[in-house]
Image (tube, rainbow, N blue to C red; front, side, top):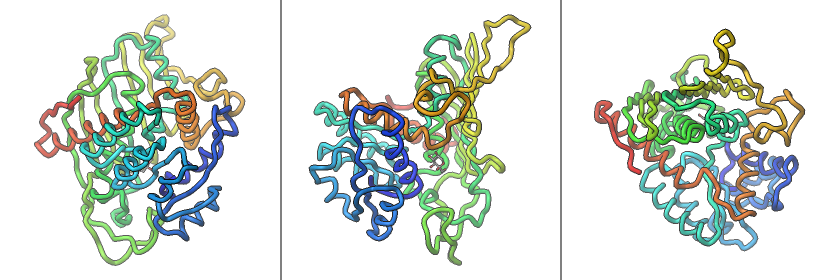
Amino acid sequence: MIGHGFMGAAHSQAWRVAPRFFDLPADVRMQVLVGRNLDSARAAADTWGWDEASDDWRAVIARDDIDVVDIVTPGDTHAEIALAALRAGKHVMCEKPLANTVAEAAEMTAVAEEAERNGVRSMVGFTYRRVPAATFARQLVADGRLGEIRQIRAEYLQDWLTDPEAPLTWRLQKERAGSGSLGDIGAHAIDMVEFVTGAHLTSVSGLLETLVTERPLLASGVGLSGTASDERGEVTVDDVALFTGRFDSGALGSFEATRFRTGRKNAFRFEISGTRGALSFDMERMNELQFYDATAPELELGFRRILVTEAEHPYAGAWWPTGHMLGYEHGFSHQVVDFVTAIADGTPASPSFAEGLHIQRVLDAVEASSAAGSTWVRIES
Ligand code: SOE
């Protein structure tokens, strides 16, 4: 695993726990954790249970005893590491968004597709797909329970940037993160509704805004827990991203991604409406799916709450008895299960780099639209 911040912790616990709760078709050994600073990498390796630490990812990728490379670094290093790992014949898991630009994502996809022909798998970390309620939502849509889908709404609302004195972390720097709310959390929203509905965005009209343009630089630390210095730096990404879109199925979509929505901590919500029914989900109530069956008797119509914890629900049977609730981290374990299964069984892994490239194209189109006064921009296929 390369990187050891927030996502490093999330992925480490998943690599540790998944093989214990699921019957995986291959053994997992948490071999080496790589970071830029060897002491920090060693401390993280000890905390999370990796056998070794290193500050040289190139040397680690060249090793014969490494089969999988898990990339949990900021977006500006995804392409270089993923390309090197794929070319070395390693299976690659890469955090979202796949890259910082369409050009990088396109090259990564081309190399991943070439590697795929030699049995090398790759996957992008859109982990929320693997929240049981989200996977179940997709099943309901595929079973026709919503009928023809006409409207799709997705919003990802956080509030950790409302304080103008919150420090300028890498997530606020374009050269490191690629974009702001748009790529950080809007990318999840796009992937989720496309996953659930099977429809793909074909054009968008967007509006991006940076609400706080300068923030204190970090004196020490890396994230929000870091300490602020007296110096200030420019925020070079969007704080709020709004866009509407058209899907290839004919459905219309509206999207909102913001880290400025006071009071909303991780409110990743979607609502999907069709001719026969509707679905509504909120990550802050992630074990539940609201389902409206429009074919029910008129006097019984209404959204009903399904607790997605029955053993037969996606992934749920491997964990606890009914109703004992899963959390944020479980999606990462499910991601490990699906990735290891794809590697061992020789089946394609999803979301593939090609799917990650499509999301990158949508992000790019939203930026281009906003820059051109919210005109409609077609998404390249
Ligand atoms: C920060 O906004 C963040 O950690 C994202 O980077 C993640 O992708 C999302 O899952 C939670 O919020």
